[in-house]
Image (cartoon, rainbow, N blue to C red; front, side):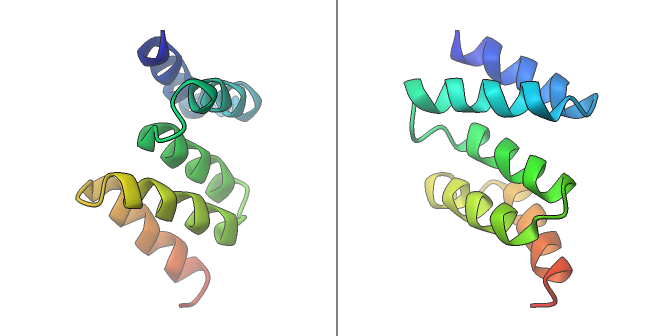
Length: 85
């Protein structure tokens, strides 16, 4: 079930249906609070809304769980650049 929600959240994010992606990520996190991909997707939603501080906060939580995931680290860097840090 969680895997299906994650795939649907990714598809929703890709088509810019942020509300659905957000909802699905929270459903995932209710079942698995340490689900790094759901946290990362929430960070991407925040970044799409130019809320880079929140995006960085959530992506950092994902990195704490999956520290070697290159995609997380790359998007963290983008947030830092947007925040001029």
